[in-house]
Length: 230
Ligand code: ADE
Image (cartoon, rainbow, N blue to C red):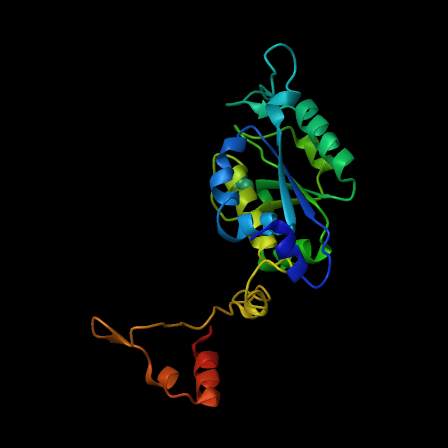
């Protein structure tokens, strides 16, 4: 279907949410962003994904982006100058955008954060750190730092994809079912884990669909689902 046909199906004209990703590894993203809902959201004109290669802002002939830590220690840290220059370029394109830094030292990322980012409908600038870390001074240019879980990954690219996925699916017009984003699990960050669901066949290798779901009794089904939600 043509992009213009998609757009005509959306009742309101929606501003495109610009998502700018600052990374040394833009090649990590296409597989995720060009599939399923994330791709459709772009195709429908709801979001745009743009990559800013941090290496382009590296210093000197070798485009240096990292350096050794003051005070000693293992590994290299991302220098502030290239990152801030990249953020400034992204901000020049989208001055109102929220700057996000995925880091194990951030606040735990929650469904309510995804909801706020989606509801704000401001652009996002996601800075993906690599190596052993970054110069702390870059946080002065960052609005929110998030940890996506209590484990350490090799960089911010996977957390950036998690954040993008969780926000984009909540944007108006992305999910097919009107209510699917609203009624699902983790609605309010509590442990409201969704009820179990079943589809055909009724009997799979002796594992049967609960009778109540076949009963057609909507009140009983609603009660059962309520009980099964944790
Ligand atoms: N970078 C490395 N590990 C991370 C995590 N768990 N969350 C966010 N950013 C990270």
